Length: 114
Image 1 (spheres, rainbow, N blue to C red):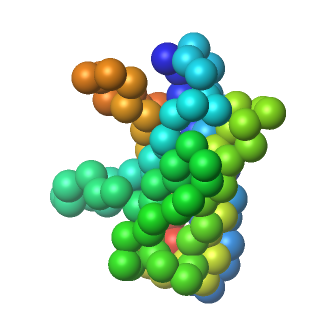
Image 2 (cartoon, rainbow, N blue to C red):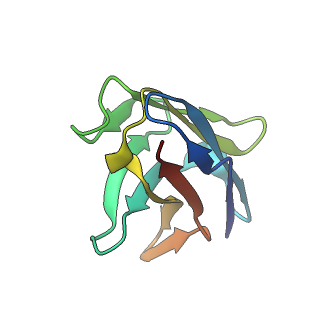
């Protein structure tokens, strides 16, 4: 299993970013996928989940601002982040659970600051 995140960066409050997660080594189209984030000094938290049919769930802190999606033809998951706030600053991780193993990417840094 390989997960590679991209798209992070520095953005001003109120701005937008689109994160991508390129997946390989497993059947992406049959796998629920997750985005997590970890801010400095805080525990890693679940941000959004997308099921195989495409239903979605979001943490209360990002509802209405973030959108998770997937493109099974490209084996890629996305996280569109709008109206970003300084509290969204974190390393964002792509995650998939296969059997008993939780697989993680290397993470991509998102910094929201003026």
